[in-house]
Length: 73
Image 1 (cartoon, helix red, strand yellow):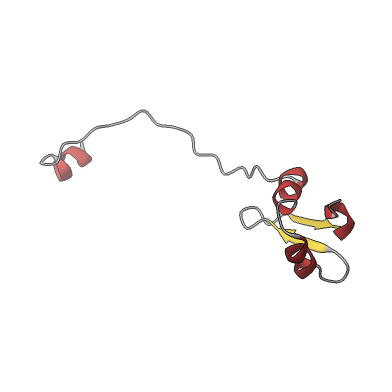
Image 2 (image 1 turned 180 degrees about the vertical axis):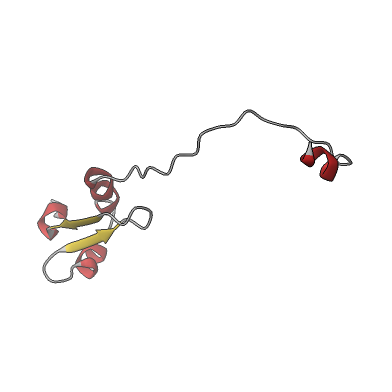
């Protein structure tokens, strides 16, 4: 009712509620797939302390890869 009282000039439509999920769908395989699309130069530039480290910005999960995992050839 409050929405109708506030916004009746614009028209109010009420939709069925949907559950909001905050689950992250990242995985080692998905991150590796993204990294495998990087060029050899980008891979080389990403190496720090002998490995490539990635942290998911959504769930803060940490992944580490050996540069050899991305050697093309």
